[in-house]
Length: 225
Image 1: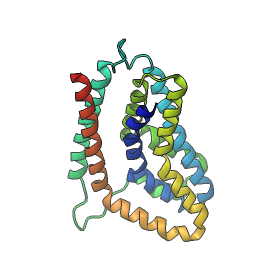
Image 2: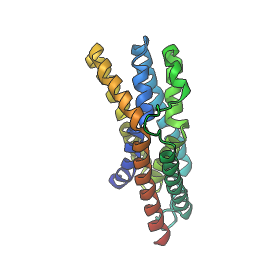
Image 3: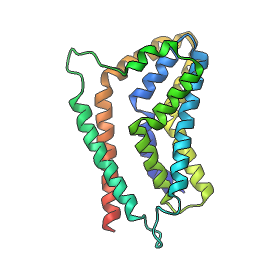
Image 4: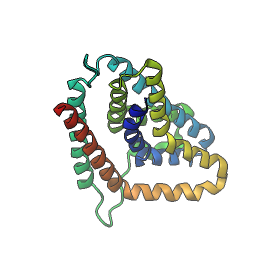
């Protein structure tokens, strides 16, 4: 199980430090309903990752390995495709970065966060965690990686729980900061949002390049063995 967790940790970390969900959480905590919207968003985020990962894990278990115990060829091919997709996305993200003097454009739905109810905040958490293309691919890759590790069902569930926990650390941390610091958290969270929005393209480009290279390297290693 240790090897499975080690293999999925980089995927979980990329999910956790992606700027967009962090910015979304900061915005939730800046609304008049922060005390309900923040926990609701967090619950939706965790549920989205857990449900998506669980579904993929159930479907992939028993199909992700060959009789010899080696990863199935389709797994390596899929990881290769994911890796190449991340490299392409990294290039596009960098090309679309704001030029000096230009204001960073954030998703339009973020302008309406002040009107969100707890249920809509929960739904936003689910969508950003499990429907967002990047997170969807990362969670699918993590679940398949767990499935190909040839460990027991209980160990698979535990490994997936570790993935969800690590991928949610940033959201948990922001929620804790808000409830512990109270009004003093406003300035810190506002500064964090501004910094992440300004450097979103650079952060995501680096993350996608590193992750794409890792997945491609793992896939080539598996296909050549």
